[in-house]
Amino acid sequence: MIRLLAFLLFATLSHAATRPNVLFVLCDDIRPDALGCYGSKHVKTPNIDRLAKEGVRFANTFCTTSLCSPSRGSILSGLYAHAHGVTDNFTEYPATLRSFPSVLHDAGYATAYFGKYHMGENNDDPRPGFDMFVTHKGQGKYFDTEWNLNGKKREVIKGYYTTIVTDLALDWLKQQKDGKPWCACIGHKAPHSFYTPEPKYEHSFDDVRVPYPATAFMLDDKPAWIKQRLYTWHGIYGPLFEWRKKFPDDSPAAVKDFENMVHGYWGTVLSVDDSVARVRAWLEETKQLDNTIIVFMGDNGLLEGEHGMVDKRTAHEASLRIPLIVRAPQLAKEGKVIPQQVLTIDVAPSLLALCDAPAMDNIHGKSFVKLVQSGDPDWRKSWFYHYNYEKQFPYTPNVRAVRTDDWKFIHYPHGDGTADKHMAELYDLKNDPGETRNLISKPELAGKVKELQAELAKLMLATGLDAKTDKMPMDEGVKSTLPDAKIR
Image (cartoon, rainbow, N blue to C red; front, side):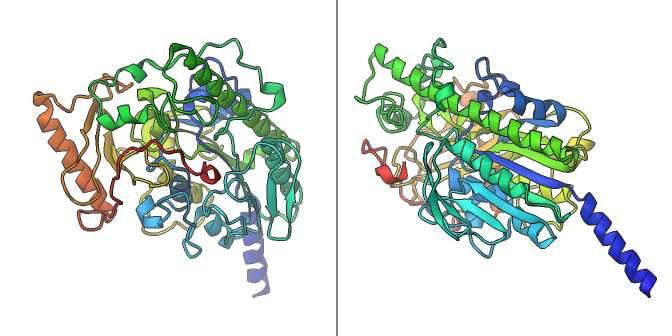
């Protein structure tokens, strides 16, 4: 009996020693094309690119709701927003709902979160499932944010957000010496507005000209609400997150404000790359690199002038697309690029599978481990997107959309069960990846529209949404009022 107990104890300790750590790095509003490994011509991100070269770069990753809190809830839970309940930027992640960090915690991991959590706008208290939880209220500031340090005290820490959050994470990591595997989550503010680079990067892109995208002027076949949005908080002629002081302004000279905004956005990404380098260096020094799963991703995409819009929320490609890079020797021994459509809801089940942790039941996402390692013939060919109109940000209608490998159909329910009030959109993504031509009025494609409408209904129903259960607010139309300064 003693020998058996000793063997079981040894086996348990050996398993604990070999279980991989998890470093989860989440950026806010980052576009894939703001990274070198996704094709940026101007933003140099050698440290993030190195992760991609050594690991897996998912070329077509999407969020299922392009809004910070709902998307973060989906990443943690593997569920669509209507199922986890965080359907706007003001709702808490349910304390009783499991997340991949809480499952790892119950499986014996030390868990910590540092940075922008962004679920519960005015709550910076510790959340369940984390041994250490360091965050702040609201959006945080690029300089001198006030932090809640695990519920023990609040303190304004002087300095640049990206540097400070990396310091906090490294301080905790250096304390992990008891042999337990760990899961450390770093939630960057960058590159969320208002884009403020570190002083050393303020002028990194001064010589790069940035015009409005061509699609900003290709709106004749688009729904009228997109044109109405041009002069609002979320349009290219609006305040541009305060980079334009006098607005609206549709003069040719005003493109300089747009250019400055994009330069600021890019500048904040350079500091994120520095952060990745610092944490990687520590992993190498402590010989933990190859026993650590490193995930780098964004919560949602960002429109930078496409179709005349800024911000996110819509079902257009720039709003949906996110970077996802996973460096994990047990997933791939060398660099791979995966072309299939992967979603935010796939992250939680994939990480738990890689950590040999219990799976979460009844979720919508699917582990991509098999897809990466050997291919998965049953991998999805289509998925659906949804977003609900916000009275605080009245610039985007209710959105329901379906995206297949080659096609996208978008429609805009009014919210009261009556017929849609806005023109729908149909795009042939294979031949028109920039969504320059809305084909919804082409009679020869009426069959394709019906096919996609049926696919959308089927996909929604599989997650519990039908005409009775898909509740949404009334679309009160695009308005020109600015949002409350406290929630921008």
